Amino acid sequence: MREAFGVEEVTEELVRSKVAEMTRDEAVEFFVSIGVPVAPVYHIDEVVRDRHLWERGMFIEVEHPKAGRIWTTNFPVKFSKYSPPHPTAAPLLGQNNREILIDLLGYSEEQLEELRREGVIGGEG
Image 1 (cartoon, rainbow, N blue to C red):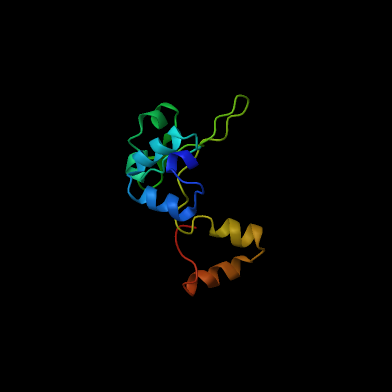
Image 2 (cartoon, rainbow, N blue to C red):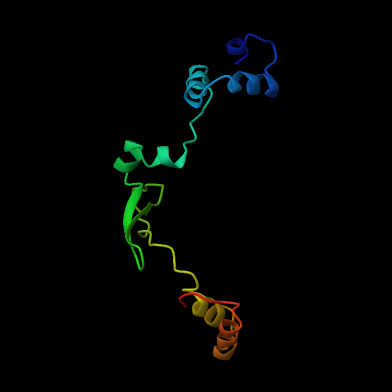
């Protein structure tokens, strides 16, 4: 790496100043050329346009109870002997109130209704 920068000691400040002059893609190309493991960080609109990610099945269409069919991200890792469950749409606001408050935390039905009346919780659940 010293040769690529033309110095005896490569400092963080030197790397920062060199990279500041480059685009993201130029920086990736530069570091790849000198053997530094690197990968670009994409903005979300670049991610959804990446053909490779679509071909790997990184996006999946799911049913949302209010929005209908929507696209979301799939599980990012592929295994040879395991298929993770398919993702689902996020729950609606408050959809899991009963399960969390009564089943997991032991609240009573009366306590749940009181929280709802007082406006502490709301939503679908």
